[in-house]
Image 1: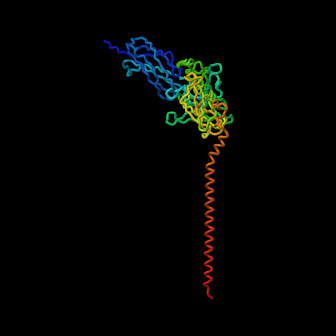
Image 2: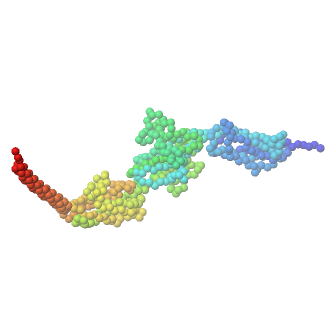
Image 3: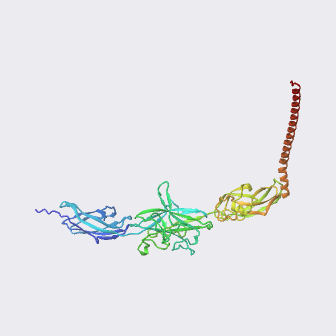
Length: 515
C-alpha cells in the first residue's frame, strides 16, 4: 500500500503590482488563486503589512471577501475581488502593501504559500476647503447699517502635500450672478478684513489681524512677512501661512457695513484657492473659477443646497447678511394755540412713521427749545433745553403692522415768558441705528411758541423775579446804614463823656499841688 502525502501549493496573481492612487480612492484588485497542489485546499488571504518609504506602518481599509472563499479542488482556479480603500488622509509617497496567501494545513512547516506585494504610489493631491461649522457659527446673520459683523470659518488643507492658500471675497455682480473676479462690485463702500484666530478651542481665543490691510498696506519694497497672514503687495491677494497636509486654520471674516447700505439681504462669498491653482491646470481637484458648482449655493433660498458632495466645489463659502433697521421719519408737526398764559400747557401733535424693515422700541421723543435744528443735529439738545419728553414703546414698520398715516402723538409744552423756538426731536440720544438719521428733527409750524404778551411778559417776569430781592437787599443796606449811624453817634457820646471826666481830674490834681 502506498501512502501519498498531500502537497499544498497555491499561487496568487493580480493584473498589476504597481499602482498609482489618490487619497480616498478605492481600487478593485482582481485576484486569481490557483490550487497547484495534489488535493483540495481551503485557503485564506490576510494583510501582512502596509509600510511607507520611511518604514512606518499604516492601517488601510481593505475588504477581503472571505465569505466567498471556498474549497479549491486540484488545479482549480478562483477569482476574487479585493477592494483597497486608500484613506482620505494619506500623504503623498511610496507605500508597500503585502498580502499573504495561506493553505488550510501546514506543509513543509508553514501554511504560507504565496505573497502578493504591491507598490502603491500615492499621487500628490490638492484640495483646499473652506467651511463653516454650524455648531459654532451661523452663515446667516441679521444686522444693520454701520455695524461690524464677524464670521468664523475653517480653512483646511485636505491635500496630501503642504499648501499655502489665498483668500478672496466675491459678491453678486450687476447682472445678478456671482462674479468670477474677486471684488465687492455693488458693495464697493463696504469693507472686508481678515484675521487669524489662535487658541480657538480655549476660553480666550486671540484674533490676529492680517498684515497689509487698509489703511496700512504693504509696499513692494517691504519684505514678505514670514509669519501669520498678510495682504500681498505683489499679488493683491490675502495669503495665509503655509499649511501642512490635513491641517486646519480658523479665520475671521470682518465685514464693515456701510452706513448708507440698503435694507436688503446681501451675500458675500469667500473663496480659498490653492497655491497649486485650480482643476483646470492640475491643481485643486474640485476648484473651478465659477460659482455655479459651489457646495453652499442656494439659488432659490429654500435652505437646500443646489449641489451636493462630492460633485461640488468646496472651496467656496457663501455668507448672508440680512440688513434690518428702523427708519423713523417725522411726517407732520401741528399745534393748536401758539400763545398761552405762563404755566399753561400747549399741545403739539406729531406723526411718526417707520419706513424701515424692523420695529423700533423705546423711542424717545422730546420738545427742545431755543436751539436750531442744525445745532441739535450737530450737538444734540442740551438737557436744560428739554421742555418735554415722551417714550414710545414700539413703532412698527410699514407693511408689518405699521401705518402709512399713523395716529398723532400729543406732546405738551408748558408756556414760559417770551417767544421760544421749539423743535420736535425723535431718538434724541441717537440710541436707535437707522438708515437715515436726517429726518428725525422738525421745527413746529411758525417755529415759535410764546406767552400772551411775548417780550412784555419777559419784562414783567424779570421785574417780578428781581424786584423783591432788590427791595430786600436795599432794606438790608438801609438797616446796616442806620445801625452804623447809631453806633457812630454812641461812640461820639462816649468820647465826649470821657473827655469831660479827664478835664475834671486835671483840675483836682492842680489844687492838691504843694510846693
